[in-house]
Length: 298
Image (tube, rainbow, N blue to C red; front, side):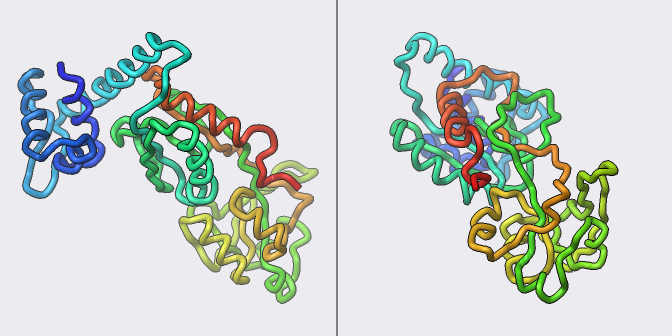
């Protein structure tokens, strides 16, 4: 089985396009199609549905994809084992990450990372939708979540501390809440799906179903809306630390910490051995975010 055929197949699965996948690997559309025909012939089954508009995986293609990805990763690990500590990570590293965190905090880290590893290239996919790493052809995911998926290996990078905050002009106009129940009389800016906020109190946890004046699916948009005075919002400190320092936003209900089991993680499939390019990237992130993250330092 030809390794280059497998590499092309995994990229076609991720991109849904034979020509585009071939272009990434320096192959013409004709050569790419020929490689796929040879791979299908060698397996004795059809892996791809081909139409004039798009390419999709057959049932056998879906079943074969994780095995092809494992073979490619194991080859990298085997090369590293032969090369020992002197192996130089190279190739293309494919990362998926939340949109806001990726823009604000990953891109500066990736800049330093690529300077340290000039033989590596990076594809960064930014989306707040959790994607399947294998089906998407990704090497590693950065996730801002509560980790419950036992099929993944996760390394914690940093806590995700959350605070309530609002613009000074909003608080001047409508007052500052003194206890969680006071939020029922305030306008709130919500992230979709996070309308109920839970607080630690002396009498136990207290959950408040907030009244949202404005909802969005993006943390930066919620932050900017609150900065404009639309209402009180709950934000990760990594998203609003600059606005808190500049006093564009003011923290409220400091005496009532938000109950939160979410953290920032680097995740990769447990079925794969850790390829050198993934290992050095995760180590680089862990070193950058270790201790108290810079967004939580006073």
